[in-house]
Image (tube, rainbow over all chains, first blue to last red; front, side):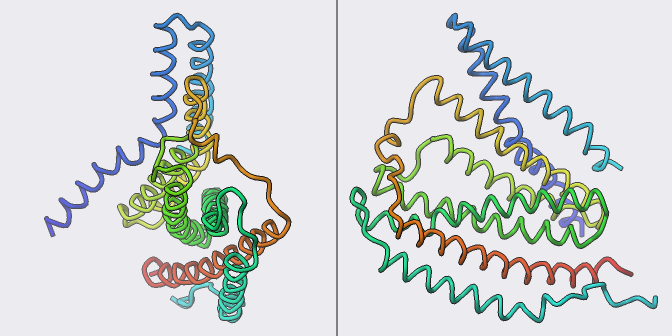
Length: 73
Length: 232
């Protein structure tokens, strides 16, 4: 029984990266590319990546406010 | 309790065998058309025939996940267990088809592009989509409380569908701003001959019937499970 419980808990901990990775990939790509563009003096590139990041932020905030209450109720 | 019978009632179980027969028959027709009737491609030769498997699998993968999304919205909105059954059924079938889609794509990529895998936007997006829905199924396995499980799964099912285009966009940008995929340029998409197009349409139809058949079987299985496990 304890073993089953431990397995359950470990599965839960292991699930976080699996679920988070796909959602974090766009931010990771945008942040790294934007930073490298900014460091190499490419202002247009840096700004467009920042704009993309901003758009992600808006989308995820809206989704979060609409459906997360359902998840924690 | 008086109402121990679960509200399964519809005609689905009765038409299901016919649906199965129709799916199998159209699959045979589509395969014969794809292998023998459709002309050989001028550039790629016979290898291109995997298109008739690859494209329908891609279509089904996307269809399945859109249905997960709609069913998730339906569950959060109405709290009817039926929607949760549709969501889990479609997610499982979608994972199966996405897996086959990746495998078929890989088999096609080797002779045409010379590599099994390349970090091209569409491939990356599909791989991430696959991981996402495997995660969705794992998430469902964690909770034992029915409505909590359904809620969490529905939230993730909605986020996943919104996230897939975003992932695609970001990876597409990352590639287009720096380097263009040179290997993929050469392959391109040749204009389809009308008999090729017809074969593709028949394949799409056949695979969609297979999906419908799988769905009807899986949904009623899930409904029966819900009836046994959750209504006490």
